[in-house]
Image (cartoon, rainbow, N blue to C red; front, side):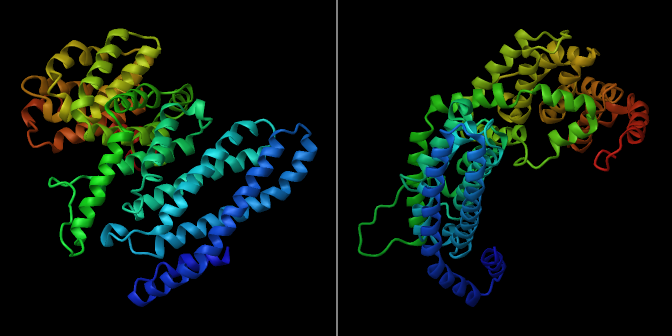
Length: 461
């Protein structure tokens, strides 16, 4: 622990001489720490395998206490290894110099995750400490992969690293139960990795393609970067073909965007906190915001392929959940999820959907459905109106203003806060019409002050 704290403190120094010293420290410490880590992981896996086959709880408890000490040292070594690789070398995104430790460490870390994951299930009802360790270890190992990819993206471009890691994460996201990884912290890290890889600017191919060096002169820095980008792009095309992209889009919307019973219970207990948790929380901290962030990036990369898919899901959801529905059905929850997706990618769906027809045919009716269970859809429509503001034309704009002001009077705080948020977007929009809002202004003004009195949190006020 002292070594890790010291390394972390030294890594904050930015002078060239300090960075050279840190690189020298890395060259001395890495091999020893890495070999210790590899030795410990073998010991841990052997012991976990043996303990998982035993049913004598007292014996398991006694042996697990000794094993936990090795596990703690192993996790500490992992921190040191991550710190050395992260701070011991300048980011290869600026130097285009490969960091060999990335290719050495990442495949072994991925293999360790794959070996540890099954123990999350096998120890769940048998040994709490080992179950917690398996859960914590898998999450921390995946965080290391995320960190190293972000710091050294070009070194990550290797057949044993980039495609293998992305493929593994995609399998976890699309089928977590089969992989034995249905716990939120690990799923979030898998989503984070796929998102960061998908939006990584170093992996975007140049218009000129790969550089073929036909002279004796070494490749320039920019030529090296173009070559890395071309290789990375080719790898991602293989691991993310069109059918897999469509599957991922469907899984994100139909599984991860859907409210759970626990979500709805939290909403009922504290609507204000629920609203902020869904819309203000850091996207890497909760599964649904993380899934939404991944969806936005994937859609941006494959918009022509995915726009019809999203529209198809939206129309399916609207057909199984009519505007006057009052029961919380799977159809209603799917419609909420489809509206979430449509709100995030409005800029592309406007080519496939007429907002005016959508508003008059469905959204306006759903807003007027005051049944308590319809708060789910009313809140989502309130947010949707703010997201689609640039597509609201003509007389419909005035009706949208009225609808949002009416939602400020809803019985549910979360719905009122969503309406208030969208009204802010409308006021700031360049084509905002004062005349269209004029009739509603007294009510809007009154209800905003009333909302200020009714809410408790500073963000709400």
